[in-house]
Length: 174
Image (cartoon, rainbow, N blue to C red):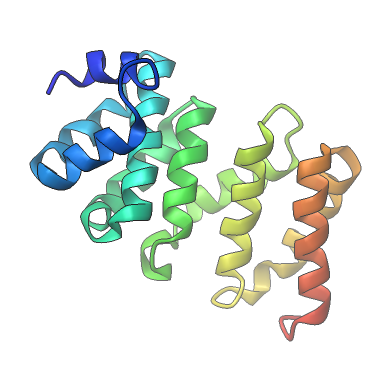
C-alpha cells in the first residue's frame, strides 16, 4: 500500500475504518505505518498515528508489539496530533510498558503548558495519574501541576484537572 497517498486521501475517499480493516487483514503493514508517524509532513504523520490509535482500540494485540516504538516516537515528535494519538495508545498499555521517566517529564511539562493543545494536556494528565499507584511520590508534584493547569487552562483542561484532583482527594494515594 502507498501509505502517503492513502493518508492524504483519508476521509476524502477512504474512511479510517476501511484502513483499520485493511490492517487487520494485512498486519505486516503495521510496521510500515508506524514508520510513517515519523514523516516530515505533519498531516501524514498525525493521520498515521490516528489510524494506529483506532487499530489499538479495535485490536490492541496487533498494536501491542509496537508500544515501545510508540514511546520513542512520542518522545521525539514535535507534532501534537501524533502526541495526542500515541499518548492515547500508551495510556492503554500495561504499566511496565509506559513507565518511562523521559515521557513522564514531558507529560508534566505538557500539562502546564498553555501552548500545548487540550487533548495532549488531558492525555498527559491521565498518563501521570495512571502511574501514581506505582509511584506515589509523584503525587505532590502532580497536584501542583494540576493546580497550575486549573489556573491557566482551557475549559477542557480545567475539567480534566478538576476531576483528577477530586479523585485524588477521595483516594487513598494521599
